[in-house]
Length: 250
Image (cartoon, rainbow, N blue to C red; front, side, top):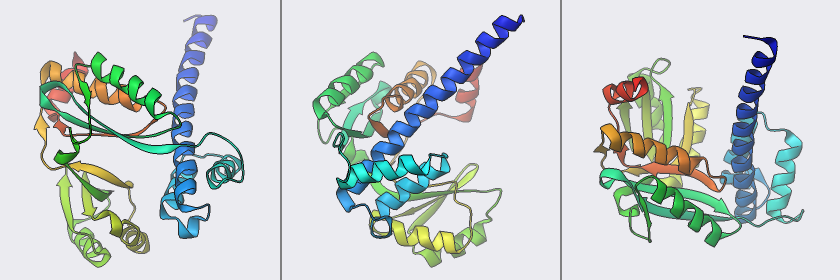
């Protein structure tokens, strides 16, 4: 490869990485602004804000950027006012989707996400289209390689968690949303490394999809998640390891 071509390739890759990082920062900043607007600018008394700041710091967001986002949310600085939104929709094979977002223009976001659904053989619906198929739960994931089942059970029971499941390479622990903060604190005190912790929509049952449906479902999740106003995407579809390997080779 010539020097010029190599440099062009490096620039393209760096540009893609920078763009992805920029989108992530946008989502993190919006969550901080919204959390501060709803619960105030003091992380000590605002669990959602505390979690948002921790997430931002884990991505090496500068402290000045975090501070300005908190000030915007609490009203100390001017700027767009964001609100939480939840959109529901369907995808291929009867799959169901919930999309959490943060926006300063609800109508614009709804119109844009409706187009995303339609481009991927889906349809955005009204309230009740998909929410009935999910439970709102605090969720914690821990790597099985670092946490044994006995150790997990002891920590989860002490924390007051409701349930835990074996999900392949990780343990998943579930708790009611109102107990999320206390369970998180208990896990932190136990010194167990959490891979992820959040309040999420968990499907009551999963639909196994394969072939073209699996590919379109995964593309729909990617397209929704790529939208600046989208914070999280939840769905009830499941794809087997064998099907994932087949699609990766296609």
